[in-house]
Length: 233
Ligand SMILES: C[S@@+](CC[C@H](N)C(=O)[O-])C[C@H]1O[C@@H](n2cnc3c(N)ncnc32)[C@H](O)[C@@H]1O
Image 1 (spheres, protein in one colour):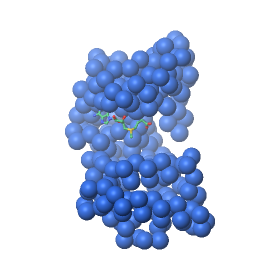
Image 2 (cartoon, helix red, strand yellow):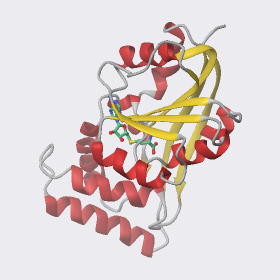
Image 3 (spheres, protein in one colour):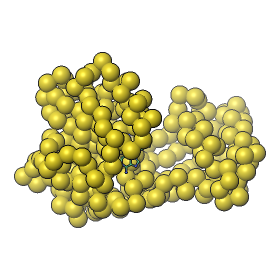
Image 4 (spheres, helix red, strand yellow):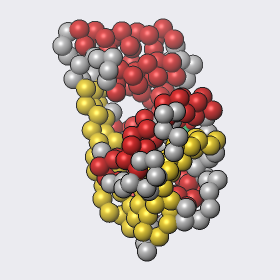
């Protein structure tokens, strides 16, 4: 959906802010081709290493440690930029958005995707434990309901809002190749010691999810939202 909104063209210069493991960087590299450039920044060295390995066969993708709030690039450098599942982790989001605006050329476009962590629908046989675990997990980011305010923030910075889209993450089975299976692993590692949640409780929470899957009762739904914006000419 990000690639569809961005409509990259051959030869374009693109910035990926908070590239993480580099899935999108690798795909964007195919869209712009060797005549284009994909620049990736991330604050995490292990993430950059992973992304570098993934993009090794595409030398027109480059990597730099750096922060979204202080982008190591000049004004009007990029035709397009993305930041996917990143801004909710940045306390000074106003600065991050003004940096995004600064490095785009006039007419350049950006796609920003964020997650509404306050609106997870996740079935468990022990709903009180589910509530405790999800409440402790909210500590993993700064803005737990960013999609609700992101578009106005982008407009305040000077961007023209072209489009908003919903990206539903819906899983009806407990499947290792699914969004919720993978975030359950992250959550069970993150929550112990927070808001009174213990390791045993986190483990029991995962077992409960597995049980709902085995009984054919699994249900997970969470929405992410995409904003496509353009810097005025
Ligand atoms: C949830 S991951 C998303 C990764 C990738 N964009 C994706 O969607 O697959 C968030 C990434 O943002 C990075 N990050 C968090 N705060 C950042 C900041 N202020 N500047 C740059 N990167 C940041 C993290 O290191 C992490 O790699």
